[in-house]
Length: 234
Image 1 (tube, rainbow, N blue to C red):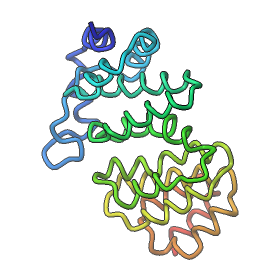
Image 2 (cartoon, rainbow, N blue to C red):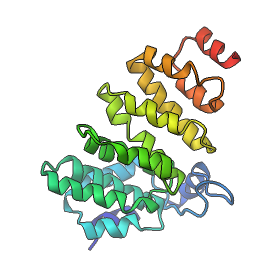
Image 3 (tube, helix red, strand yellow):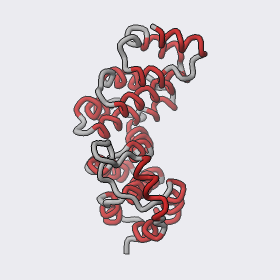
């Protein structure tokens, strides 16, 4: 029996479904169109995963990641993160990464990306000399979600003071047409700026006048108000 799946279904709350569907933009023409919900909030999903991740098999993960329900896919990803985090055998860790990369078609909303990619790909690549995987996702991702994985995965690098990849991938995505990529890139630029404001200022100097307004707003959010206004007015 798939314990993770059965426990998630047991926590379904129909009263929450409409609000979650609206929040994750599931209407016609919206980025989450057609997604289905059980009505489970993230803290509840986390508690379920914490309770049973040790007993989850790859067969269970496969069943859950392919689920029509958004929260079950999230539970699969959070369980995968826990399995990866507690594994210290390099060959086994690579199996978890391969599973992630071969199931990106099911990682199809911003929360599924943001809660899984940097604890997995970011940690996996933290000490790697070749991080071209993230650049390839940013440039050639088949969906905006794969492209978002490319930039958000660099959060782990930023937290360790390694900023170059964030700036380089943000530059690749600088003129991307989708607002969700603008937000993600701006968010990561802001986090990089917390570590080294001068590096962020240098990145912005030749770009801020042409970069998407949303990306710029996110990037300079922590700047003093007068400085922010100066960027926005120009």
